[in-house]
Image 1 (tube, chains in turn orange, cyan):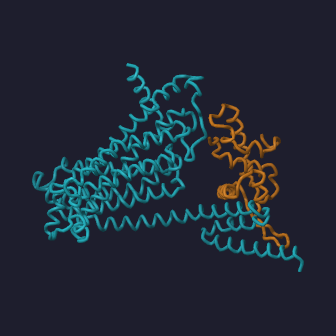
Image 2 (cartoon, rainbow over the protein chains, first blue to last red):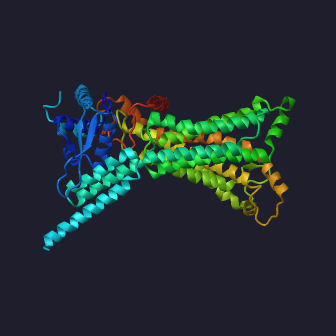
Image 3 (cartoon, helix red, strand yellow):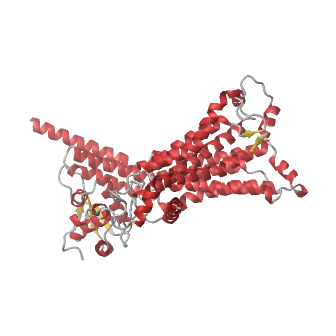
Amino acid sequence: MTPRSGFSAQTLSVLATLCADASQWQHGYALAKQTQLKSGSLYPILMRLADRGLVEARWQDEPQPGRPRRHLYRLTAAGLAAAKVGMADAAAKSGARQPVVPRERTMPRVGRSVPARVVP
Amino acid sequence: MTRAARRRSRGEAKDRWTRAAGRVAARLLPADRRDWAEAIWAEASEVPAGLARLGWLAGGAWLMARESLMVRRVRNALLFAAAAVYLAWTAIPGTPSALINSYIWLRTIATIVVLAVLPWLVRRRLGPVIDSPLARSLRLATFAGTMALIVAMAELDDVTDTPRRLAAQGPHNQPSIGLLLPWLVFVVLLAGYAATILAVTAQRSWVTLRTVAIGTGAGAALGVVMYAIMPLGMSKYATAPWLRGSAIDPVVVVAWVLLLGGPMAAALLAGWLCRGSAGPLALAEAKIRQGLAAGTLATVVGSLVVCILGLVTMSLMPSAGWLVHLLYPGQHLTAAAVVHLVSGYFPAGYFLIWLMFPIIGSGIASLTALCAWGRQAAREQGGGPGGGGPGGPELAPEPPTGLPAAAGSEPISVAIGVYTSTRSC
């Protein structure tokens, strides 16, 4: 089930969402809404991607009044390249053969979260 | 203050408390992970109040529990190291000068190495342990039991003066390699037992958690009943002094039923409850695999339970008066008499159990599973499109533990082929 790039379907969906607007910093909740991942799934993915140097994270400089500072995320240059390779691999793989297990299981959210223009 | 303002102020106070709780909880994590935990807590105030926010915070709590597992892993490694040092200190004789002492050295060191290396190997191949109390408890019990077994064996060697007895049987007052061979086989089997338990409880194993539960339950029942029959092993004097006369007969019947029927029942139950397979596996073959795994696991766990409990009981006898009173009620045995009784145990009995139980279990389980689903599996394998009769082979969703698609499928396929050819003859 794992694409050649080594990313799981959920990781790919996070990468695709970050890749859609790679220059912008994004919040965790916005990412969770777009990828439809729960916080318990999203943050471990972000942590692993940050550990691998594919995602950079920082705290918000000026929080809104009465609100705590938020953590922001965006792809690094390496992350952008890896995301493109990963999505291309996943697209090639899903086109090459019919998956045995239902499609929702193999690629649950990439299709819904990746805008068509982003997929190379 | 208006009601709305009061409600807003109460909400902000609740937010502050939640964030403070998050910061405190984040301190349980390694330093490089605390930012992430605080990030989830900070982000919670953006999530709509109610169930959605509760779900978000639950995800954060889950993340912290998972990340603190890293800390737990380090703690487990330290605990294992402490146990290994204790094991070496207790079970290793002073000097490896004589051959038999060298063997005891080898047995203890090999056990420690096996228990240290196997989890690492299994983790690389099959992933970490399933996140379930059952899987963790099974692994912990196997490790603790194995260490206790080695300490008990060393204690028994000491009490019964095994080195001298074995040496007396060999030429030049040294035990021959032939005499030590079963002991070496024992260590190899010990590694096999530990590897089996580690493999079936790994996340990428094709054995489902349900199958592990069924096999463990059947095995524990088998082990306890066998232990009740012979808490002191197959002795020359008495196997179960605490069950007198014919009182032992029903327990013996139950033990035989569990030994022969346990793997069969476990195989049928695990196969019946298997609702699907992952990857290219057909349903019937998945059922056969789960059945085989459950039956084998039943006898592996049963053998571990009876051997560990039995040998530990015997090793405690010379020093634990309460145990002697329990096993020999109404008798006043001197220390010398207890040593004499323990010396009379028949180690080959445990060795036979150690060797034969998994063979019996896997044999019975494979036969049971093949009889139950072999024909259907053959039909699904050879039928091509539309094969599998009415309803066809179902490919249901992947089980929670996941199955690597083709791992180890060849022997099962061969077995199905052999089974169908014998049925058609």
